Amino acid sequence: MSDAASAQSPNTVWLLRRLAAYLRPHWRWQAAAIMSSVLVVATFLPFPWLTKILIDDVVGAGNLDLLGPAAAGIVAAAVATAGLLLASNYLYTTAGEQAINDLRTRLMDHTLRLPLAYFRRQRTGEVVAHFTTDSVAVTGVYRATFGAAPAAVIELAVMLLVVGLIDWRFVLVSLGVIPLQATLPALLGRPQRRAGEREQSAMAALGGLSTELVAGAREIKAFNRQGWAARRLASDLRRLFSARLRVATLRHTRLFFTVIHELIRVAIFAVLAGAILGGEVKLGVVLALAQYMLYLVGPAFALMGAYAETQHALGAAGRLFAFLDTPTESAKPDAARGLPEIRGEIDFEHVNAAYESGAPVIQDVSFTAPAGRTTALVGPSGSGKTTIANLLLRFLQPSGGRILVDGHDLAAVTAAELRRHVGVVFQDPVLFAGTVADNIRFGRDDISEARVVEAATIANAHDFISAMPQGYATQIGERGLRLSGGQAQRIAIARAIAADPRILVLDEATSALDAEAERLVQAALERAAADRTMLVIAHRLATVRGADHIVLLDAGKVVDAGRHDELYERCDLYRELCDLQMTSNGAVNP
Image (cartoon, rainbow, N blue to C red; front, side, top):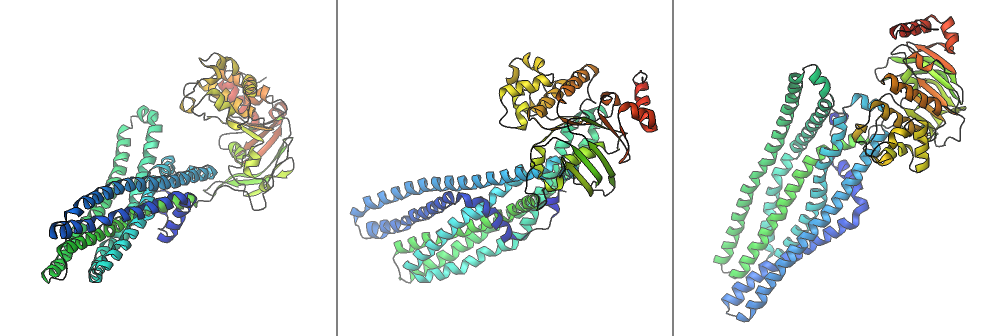
């Protein structure tokens, strides 16, 4: 279950206030919608009274001169009502959808500011569910609480006023039955909200599992685990079925409203029949009163429906705001200053770090990566190499020690400002649907076409890009699936170079490539290293033998540091790693 789903249900008023904040910038649309609702009520008013004129004055009194005006009035009121209803729905929808778009924008901005640790413990599909199922469900609040409810209140008030002007005794009848109408929704409100929360949580879990199974389709087929996948899916589907059945059951208890509605109609007509038999009012007036009083039933039931829909939607709203309240990565309060132009010297001073499990990943790590030089981080798997890169990029915060760039403590620099000076190439780079040029220009919006070509040339990518059907305008597909691994990696290098960072971090950038692709990428990296500080994380030591400085890590600690020849001569672990890799590659260390 997601963090949002597991949170306690917050206060209803608090949720509504937070949702209303997204509607506030669009208040003009909402005000126009409410005004149109008032006008809709105004067009309703003539119908019963025109009916009274037809019965009492035209039929009863034989005044045929009033027939034409009365009929024309009915037609005009009907046309005006239809037009205003259309306008009202359009305005309410516009205001609500704009509010939802603002909320979704806020969700994406928040998502991209979350620390990477959040995504290590949370399914991608459940995060995506906030943009899909949860935000769709929340539209019910804008449609019901901020749309149907105000319109119903206005209509109810106007109809009570009109009935009171005709005969105040019938207002007492109306006020006597309205509490009866409100009883059932009030009783169902809390169960409906809890059911809505369970339904949204179950839908998010199903989305997370579906994303996982689709992404792992290759592994599932390779290991013949289709049955295992089907069982996991069936379990989540049963949970969703149970949740949706509960929601549907509570929703259909509103069928009792129909019974209440009919009882109210009987009570109204009983009172009116007594008035007719007592000779107190004319038949036309009685029928007009009957219509006005039945008009009272409509907004009363609209309010009940709005209440039920709001309670269901607030379950999703609770999940959304629990997610939005998840702490994001941010600088400390005194970290408002930026980072000036830098040379790129990196210093780790007695740095400790741990992930959420609490077990230390690196301990008392100290080293210097000189500006404009290439520093390699090597060591066995799990020695802390990638953790050091994550610390430098502010994906992870140190639990002790300091990290400095040109003497500036990164704890006092905003993450965004730091990353403006740092480029990174991951082992498995993600490219985005769009053109080759779009992906190379990804790091900054103001990169010129000439700079794109220059970066691609440095990255050894210009030749294969030029050979594509549309060159730099070629669409590469989702995640760059139309490219080979080596091509995707070289575009990722071009992307990092195009932003012109002073520091370039390479996290196992060649480990997944074949020999020829690795040769081309390695040549590209050597060209990219000119005048930049390069921090290279490498598993294959042959790729970093020419580095200016090599830092050897083991079990989260710095074991030794120096050039390749020095380390090979004096460090048993380094020599063992080199000899093991050289032997496995069929070569001998010189």
